[in-house]
Amino acid sequence: LRPEATALVFEQEQLSYAELNARANQLAHHLRSLGVGPDTRVAICLPRSTEMVVALLATLKAGAAYVPLDPAYPAQRLAFMLEDCHPTVLVSRSDCAQALPASAGVPLLCLDAPHSAWPLAPQHDPLVPALTPAHLAYVIYTSGSTGAPKGVMVAHAQVARLLRATQGWFDFSPSDVWTLFHSCAFDFSVWEVWGALLHGGRLVVVPHMTARSPQRFYELLCAQGVTVLNQTPSAFRQLMGLQAPDAPAHALRLVIFGGEALEPSSLAPWYAHHGSRTQLVNMYGITETTVHVTYRPLSEQDTQRAGHSPIGRCIPDLHAHVLDPYGQPCPIGVAGELHIAGAGLARGYLNRPELTAERFVPDPFGAPGSRMYRSGDLARWR
Image: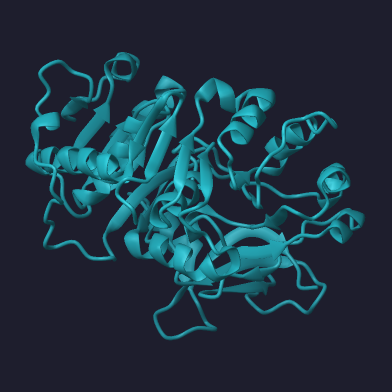
């Protein structure tokens, strides 16, 4: 990495890798002084900003797991998440902290508080001797089909192997420009933030109101020369609606879909306007299996195959099993429940051992002691 290279962009503010590292180290040292360490949790409730990314990185440098709380969430949901995750520290800003529910016993660190000690902390890397890849990196809450938030615990090893296992497909490099389009409370952000920073790229943090306006967002990605875009299919359809002949030129080389089922026929207008100069990729994923599970590069021919969402093949260190209600493999063409096994499985659900045992089950097709995750999704082999 080049320390002077731009790491973060938010509106008119930029941080180089050296500046990002120094600020994150200062906050990490301060978090350590507050008792933060391996497998402790730091709740982060901040608006989209460079300081939000600083707080995420600082938490990892301090050895802890970050728990992202979206300031836009209802107070009742925030209160539940705070009580459930029992963080060592809650990192916020004065304008966000006022809207947070009372969290008795949780120390509050307001980054913009006057006379705060953290900007005076050392700028060198903190030492966390006991930290291992098996310790938690984050806890992200997902509602699933029940509507009851549950915290999914994911370790450093799962995130590192995701990026390592997919690098051969995408060839990410320091010349890439990414966007942080999604809320950090949504696990697509894990791919966006660490995909950009671990490959030395530039991460453009998309302001909240810009993310809600397809026109403004398209103008931003053109102005910033974004090369890697991660979108849900529904959000991308809104961008496609702006593809007039006189629209600004974009620099996209990759568009990666996730978060919901893709109807390939909906991409026909994009291919008609842009051809194949941008590679579109569909990736099926689940929070419990660390963002992405499968990879399927798309072509214009796929737009003529309506009625199904092709998810392709598994990431190399994962395995997919399509099983019937008796746990037996389904024949090709027969639908069954998709089960995922391999290196991407989360540790489980925070404070939910019964649910963890129900969804993360022994893998009869793997090595002794291995697990697989019951996705609840239907799939079939083609």
